[in-house]
Amino acid sequence: MEALILAGGRAERLGDAARGNPKPLVPVAGAPLLRYTIQRLAAADVTRAIVACTAGQEERFVRDLAGLGVEIVAAGEPEPLGRGGGLRFAAARRKSAGAVLAMNGDELLDLDYGALIRRHRELPAAATVVVAQVNSPFGVVELEADDAISGFREAPKLEHWVNAGVYVLGDEALTRLPERGDHEQSTFPALAEEGKLYAFRHTGAWLTVNTPKDLRRADEYLAAHPEWRPAET
Image 1 (cartoon, rainbow, N blue to C red):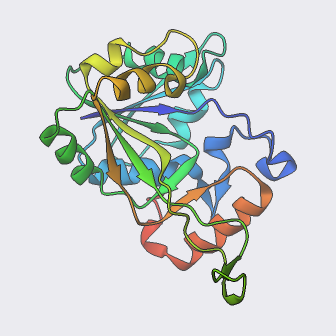
Image 2 (cartoon, rainbow, N blue to C red; image 1 turned 180 degrees about the vertical axis):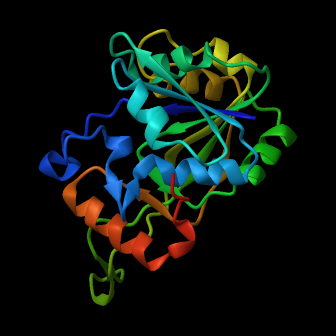
């Protein structure tokens, strides 16, 4: 099994906290962010990961992600291609046919990739999207019909499901990725309209690292969960 990883993020919102690193290589709890994902991919028998990064950063990604049992192929984009274009660019380096994992390289999920792949194969899906629920950024006030306040809840889970940035893409979905632009605004809406897009619900941890506050939370979470710790190079 192969994986396609989008790793062109420039960590602009992280500012000085990025320490000059591309976002997927920002240190979190002592290791590059993407290294945690590569270790989980290795546990799911993924043997090759194609990382779509900014041209000129290829050597860094290969070096910083080495030693986990997954061959790292860094595909440097000659110009920004967007997320869909980046996946298409990375997919051109594949060695195998059939379904492939695809994901953002700047997020952490305690996802069972094996279960995701098995579920995709059970479905009549061109692509399967991992979805998750997020917490409200605010506490909520519970109201009765007469506007009496019956209680409060601190940052509850919202009822809607959102795209968590991990997919299984079949051959049809791969051929329909845009050369430039975002697949979530082109390929996925078209597949959904045709009934070929399915969801895989994830209820575990999902950590995004977009701001210094996110980075502190990720550091704290990973420090409290040593089972996430990736192997040393």
